[in-house]
Image (cartoon, rainbow, N blue to C red; front, side):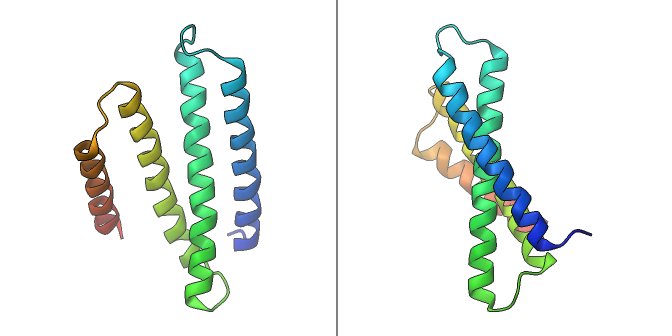
Length: 121
């Protein structure tokens, strides 16, 4: 099993690559002429960037709150919650693009993901 420091390093590298991918897609494509693959790459980049940044933030918060060095239990918890956060970001973007996003649908999505986290935990 790789060390947690290696995991954090690759998470930072992948997050930076995803952020660069978002800027590349936004600069080079028009939503009016965009096809399925352009939107797929955009949503995939947003998911990876949201996942990576929330994973890194989760690890930092766990490190500060626990007061001990990072362990694999911290990485597993941060990984699980970052995955759910990335899914939430992409779901909110898809709902927003189809004009279905309101406070009730966002609250219901948040409640579903919180209950899913509690069930998985």
